[in-house]
Structure formats: structure tokens, C-alpha cells
Image 1 (cartoon, rainbow, N blue to C red):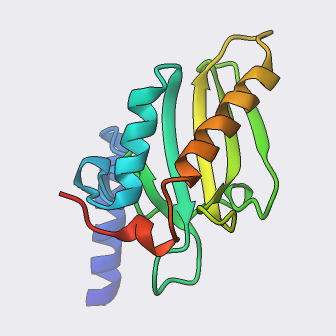
Image 2 (image 1 turned 180 degrees about the vertical axis):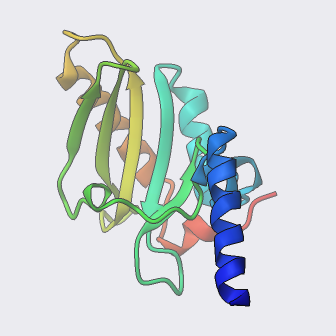
Length: 161
């Protein structure tokens, strides 16, 4: 009975937090500002160098893990498991969202040797009718510049100040 009461209480608290406007990202996943690894520094560098971006994030398999998750992001979703559509295996996806408006582009992330080590998600400011190919070319150039700074997957997890 005590376990059922505890479960019910936790459920009520979760519902209350949701009703208060807090999302799972607020309570479950890590904060980008607290993420002190090389991958997060690369995401910050990407954003600083590309004012047309709204968000950026890296999806990789962390050391000791079996599944891909968000290891670095401008959003507070560090550690969130990657959605199936974010696990690319060599392909690229382009997803316009006219409600926001933004254009999401997810590309395979490579290290310096060209080995695929995860995915790089970029969201550009975008208006209906704009040239998506231009944004794909820009995203590819960003990805390629970042790849030159990644000796290995493990290097993304090195601690930064």
C-alpha cells in the first residue's frame, strides 16, 4: 500500500509540475550551461560563428553507453536519448517548420578521419520559399569545419574549464 501511495504522490507531483509549465527537460535532462565537455564548447563556437542559427546540438554514443544521446546542445536537453530520426547512419534530413519559422537540418557528424561518430543538428532561421539547398550547403560547411576539430569520438568528452 505504501508503494502505491508513493507512486500516486509522485504522479500527482509530476502532473502538477507539468501544469506549472515545467517540461521534462526542466526536471530530467542536463543544462547546457553546466555541460563542461569539448562537444559543448564546439556547439558554443558554432553558434558564435553563425548568427543565422537558432539552435545546434550533437548526438553521439557516450563512453560506456550503448545508445546515442544528446551530448551537447544550445537547449537544456543534455543526456536526452536521441529520437530514432536523429540517428542518421550516413543520411541527412531537412525538416522545415513554418510555425516557428525554422529549418532543421540533421547531418552525420564525422571526426577528422571521416569516420561517422554521431549526428549534428542545426536549426536555421527560415521563411517559407527560401532556398533550402543554400541552408544545406551552409550546414555541410559548418559540419565539415567542426569535423576538422574532432580527432576522435572520445575527444568530445574531454573536460573543459
